Structures are given as structure tokens and as C-alpha cells.
Length: 234
Image (cartoon, rainbow, N blue to C red; front, side, top):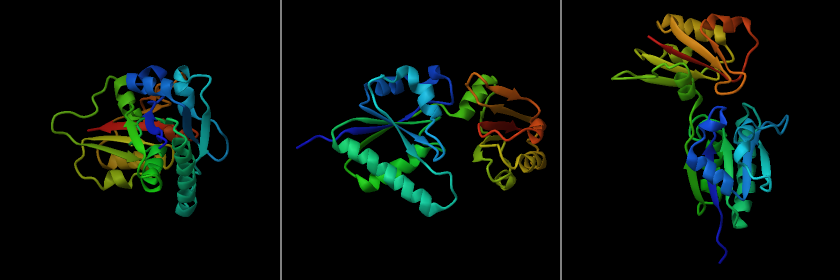
């Protein structure tokens, strides 16, 4: 009976290749096939760029299209098709690595693959290797404590504005990822909840063009940048 391959979901961190864990590097170097997500508009993958120092030139790198759409049926179809491609690779006895930015369990395309693989190929051996998130990297970059003592921490997407911030009473610390849309409403929500004065934004954390923005009001006058996060606290 032919042995099936193993799937590794590997977090490559926010941008600095030196922030990959030793285990992530070892698994990437040993992979038979590399998979990663890309938009339907092009095949560029930041995750592959970050991990490139550790990818053997002989290993095939396959980009899988993940449409940026609110149509759940379209998205579900793409997730299923991508999972089937990976499943076929495992059936050939090859070990596959799916590279994802940050951590595979936090706002990650690997999450969609993981759920589909459990349904399509329940016998598959899957291992998730954690990575450093953008908000952990940003707090370290700023030498700023993210949360301590008995405080609480809200991690939320900023894609739909500030309502989630307003709806959580008493939270002392907030990490807002995808803070590239509705920035005026996000800023107002931070003001409404007393979190604005101790807020800072970081764009492209860990990359060569990283930028720290101490006055987040400046974001309202800039072109939206998808790789923007905000840390705020009381």
C-alpha cells in the first residue's frame, strides 16, 4: 500500500526571513512540493518571497488562486479545488508545505485549506507549524507590551470599520489588522472608547519598506495600504 504524503501548514511570519522558526525552516527545506496562495490577478506570493532563502531551487512552487470575493459560493468552490490539488499531491506520496503569512491559525488562507482537507481527505496527516503574527512583530518592533497582568486584548479586522471596537466594553488593548479601509471610522471608534491617544500604526512590518506612524490620523490622508495594522491601548 502506497504511503500518502504529509501536509504542513507553515507560518512564515510578517516579512523578515529571520523570524521563521527553526522548525519552519527545516520543514521547508525538506519539502517535496511548495504551495502558497495568490490572488486571481497575479501569481505573486509574499509568503514565498519571505521563505525563498530556504526553498530548494529544485522544489516546485505552486500558487493556488484564492479569489478576494464576498460571494461565499465562489470562495468555497476555490477552496475546495485548491484542497483537491493538494490532496492529489499527497496521494502521490509527496510531502507538501503550504506557506502562509504570519501564523497559519490567524486570518490565514491555510485555515480554508485545513477545513477542506479534513473533509476531502480525512486520512491525511496534517501538521500546523506556528508563525509570528504581524501584531506580535509590531509590538516587538515598538518595544511595546501588547498585554499584561489581568488586562484583555482584542484582536480584530479593521476591514469593516470600528463597530467591533465600540461593541467590546472595557478592553484595555486592541490589535487591528487589515486597517486599510474605513480608517476614519476606526479612528473615531478608538476616540469613542478612549484608545486613540495611545495608538500607533505599522505598515509592512518586518519588511525593508516598513513604516511606523505615530499619529494614526495621518492614515486618513494616505492611499489605503493593505499591510497596515494598528496597536492601541488605554
